[in-house]
Each structure stands twice: as C-alpha cells, then as structure tokens.
Length: 304
Image 1 (spheres, rainbow, N blue to C red):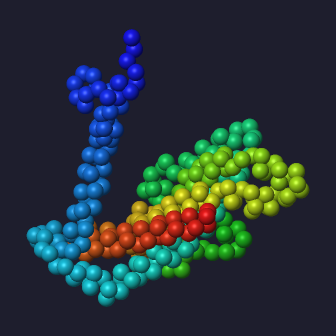
Image 2: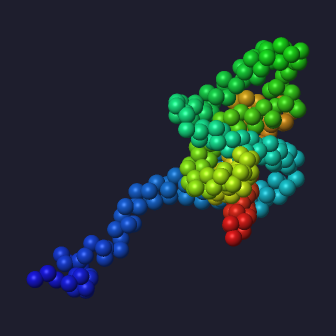
Image 3: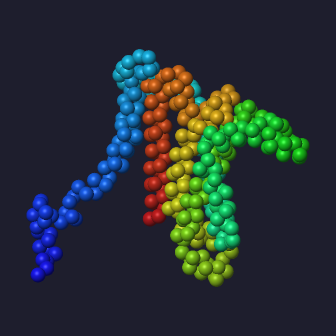
C-alpha cells in the first residue's frame, strides 16, 4: 500500500527516509562553486581595495592606515577633478550613441529579410573583438594619413589630427567606444523587440498610425525595461573607460582624454600610489552605484 504524500513529508529529518526536497542545503551546494569564485574574484579584492583606500601603500613601503587623508588629497587634486570632468563629458557624448543608435540598428535588423542574420553577426562582431586590437586599428584609421583624413580631403577638408588635437581627441575615443559596444546594445534591443506584442503594432497599423507613431506610442513604451538595462550598462561602460584611452591617447594630448579609469591606472602603475588609486576607484565605484540606483528609481517610477 502506497504511503500518502503527507506521510512522506513527516518522515524523519535524517536517515534514508528523508525526502530530497527537505534537504535545505541542496541549492547552496549547487551555488557553492559560483559563490567561492565570486568571493575570490570580486568580494575579497573589493574588501582589499576599500582597505587600501584608507591606507598609504606605495608597493615598496608597508601598508599604513591614514584615515581620510587620500580623500583630502583628492579634494585638492586638480588632475582628479579634470579626470572627473572628462569622464562626465565622455558619458554625455557616449549615452546618445550607445542608447539611441543601437535602437535604430535593432529596428533595422528586426526586419524579416533573407540573410538578415549575417547583418546581425556583422554588427555584433566588434563586441567580441579585443578592445586593444580594435583601438590599434582605429589609430591607423584616424591617423593624419589615415582613411578618414583621405575621405575628408576629397571634399577639401583636413587633414585633422584627431588624436593629437585637444578638441577632437575625446570625441574620437567616445566614437570608438560607441562603435565597439553598439552590437551588444543592439542585441539587447533586439531581444526587447521580440517581446513587444505584434498584435499591438498590427492594431496601430490598421488604425492608420504611421511608422513614427507606432515607434513612439507602441514600441518605445514596450521597450522601457530594455531602455533601463541599456542605459545602466551604458553609464557604467562610459564611466569606466580605460582600454581605448590607454591605446589611443594615453590620456593626452594635454590631459584632454584623462578619464577616471586611466587616472586610476596611472596613479597605481606609474606613480605606484596604490592607496590613492584605490581611493579614486572607490569614488568611481560610488558614482556608478548612484547612477545605477537613480536610473532604477526613475524607471520604476515611470512604470508605475
């Protein structure tokens, strides 16, 4: 005679009769490897970085606690404020290119045409390419004798020293970062477009709504959660830009492309001031958290 399910649930808390579902530690067993890797690769280094932010450590000297001295130095450091200003300017230029342009790319590749998968792959290819390799290629493209200046010379413009001109260097780096990440954000938007009910767009088309009206009143409202994800990732990507600056300009000319990410690297691995670099990194971390939380708050309020 089969034992009722309630009887199974009441069987002893241990021993061979224990029901598998009652083993509360089973989920944690599956998560254990991931939790260990997370602790080793993120949590513990983050704790060390926070400790160094309140210490003086120059590699050749022992760690000594200095309290808020690094942050006091930061408050009167003109290069830090210049780097912060450049990072915010970088973000202002980067957001439209990384949030708006990929949306139109997603709308383009969402059209059911033969061979459209090839276009999607072509747009996504820069995402999986090393930033160092991409930046080295772009150095030749924007060189004084590069392709861009050759095209400009055809219409009587240039040559322009894109990477040596203080007015052009930062926008050039922003353009590279936006081109590199466009495929990722396009795929995010494409996934969001697949989730927008086709019945709504078809109903709007039957009611006589133009393509722009359908985009503004049907598609964009359905993509608000996707916009939130894209905007958050774009803000984080823009504030921590480093590889492109390192390869293209090294923060120059005249610190015109000095971002917080590059300034942290220069203080840590050029000046060997690990404590001060960690303090700047902690400030950058706090800024990115504020941006992410503010974006989440605004998005949730809009949804309500």
